[in-house]
Length: 223
Image 1 (tube, rainbow, N blue to C red):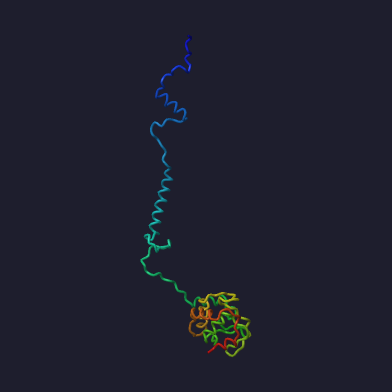
Image 2: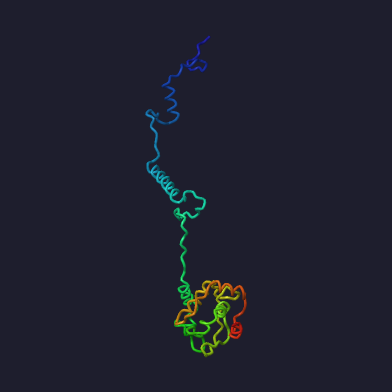
């Protein structure tokens, strides 16, 4: 029987050594062996960024948590001491002057004298200084037709409605109407009392929606 060739697979191969196995693995991985346990850290820049974010989050939570009270809802406010908040008040005369300059000054003039035979004066006017309910109704619903002021008749064009009523072109709130009436009752030498917002609201709800008033209708309402 003839001898088997040396590369015949039926022949037992010599046992592989550790060095040959490591070399084969390194070649298969196409990389260099890590002999010194080297590994890469995250870039230091990212480490600082994440540290800064964690610090900011902790500071923000501590500042705006309101000590985790259930009644804290506004994150812009620091924890309070329980004292009531101070509510800013608006000077009605200052508000009234602004409203007057926005809409009334064109007809009644800066000095409150109006225009002769056209727009009645507000200064020293019995309508301005007189019954407050009559005056409120004029501004709420408007006025049409001639009107007599200080013995002179003014063929006034229809005064528009300023209140929050049907057909009102200005839709002023009750507090704005009260403010502008308070202003004209204390300006240009007038010395009448202020008009309260509650009074304007009361008359608006009581009267409801209607067309402009006439002088005769308003005079009939006087006691």
